[in-house]
Length: 466
Image 1: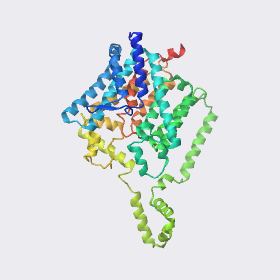
Image 2: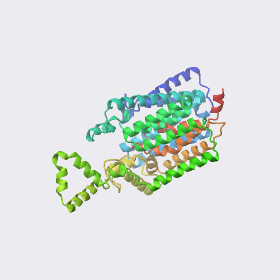
Image 3: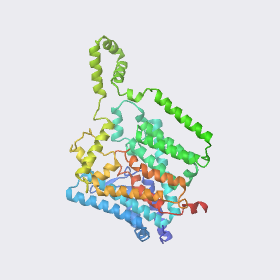
Image 4: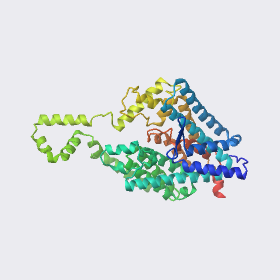
């Protein structure tokens, strides 16, 4: 990673633009936004354009892999633009095109900053930006948790349609979506660990952040984010314990370990357990809740006076209530997946085009019903179904990064950061399942260029020894 020869004045200007870009990054287009010929203009977009222009001279110092990634991302955005011109422009298509353009601009800015300032200063800049991003999320998340005050938006307004639950206290921030919030938090924790030495040295702080992710995911009812927090916890705990515990076992230790595991197997094999979650889906559960809720209306007495055959018919009717409901979240996600697979079969090379997934759902052009939901809720489906080989190409780049990460030596990167890096790449498609759409999330735009800079820089060990 070579540092370019910028004058002190030019570096000062770029530093100021970088600060503006990083500070406005978490806010996206939520403040001081105006439209010009249908194009949204907002502070972060302006800062990105100015940085892009300022960093153009750094192109000559980019490495081969950086140039390949930029050519790919630029070609992807160009393909989307041409597709819209040929097939017809739609609001949904413009939305996806904007995401692809910003994805390219963000990658160029990250590579340009690394070339302009050199690795150490670049690492500090990214660290400070990610810290600010995380701080903003946590402050708003805790305020929302304690007060149930949220910035009003379409999804927040829907809270009035549901019974009072933990979701009322879930964090939304400006994203108007508690699942988006959890996706941002899950990505930030991993990226910050790669670039922040403080977080790496204070593993208890990393565990605290994971606990907050778990906590907010629980309130948001974002189960996938909750599962990711479990894996994070195990990983960070292992990193913390590994240097202290010497994994040497005597035969006696092994005997007790395997005896304990054997006892657990026997316990689970020889006993039955009450599954509360499964019971909640049964007709009996629905009926019991109906009875309790209507005690003053003599529901219990009425039910008891029914003959056995009528009681069985009532239970059968309640079974229909607990049967598959196409409007339930889980079933909608499955149907979105099936519809995405159909699109991939019908358009294996070019995909359906930018915005086509949402547009086709709004026009009911798919086989499987998804109620009023039109976003893919699946990053893999989102990019491959809509963009064909470009989507496959993006994941091919991630696979290249994965194998490059695995091959990193101990002289290049510390073991704990290598583990986090590999973990982040492996779970990236699963994080993409949390929000309704992933392509427009600005941390996604940052992800590939940031891990590219981290992977292909080979001096971290030297930095720590200095």
